[in-house]
Image 1 (cartoon, rainbow, N blue to C red):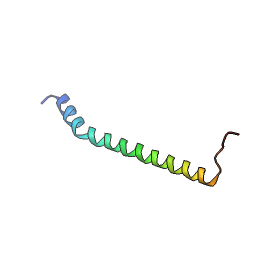
Image 2: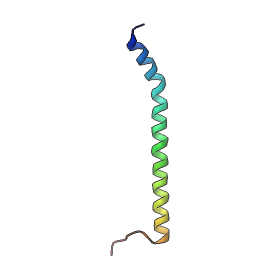
Image 3: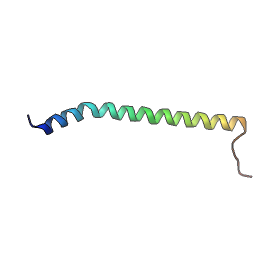
Image 4: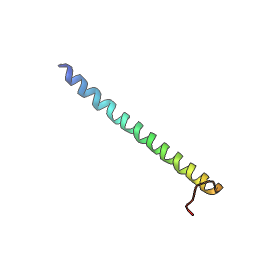
Length: 50
């Protein structure tokens, strides 16, 4: 079996897991940013335009 087939098979196995990890990381960061924004808004420490 040529070496590039090994790379293709490994990519097919690892790719979906890497994509799911990136998706979960982005979701956690988005939720964290929303929570921080909500906390800042509720405490009144957010800079608001006059």
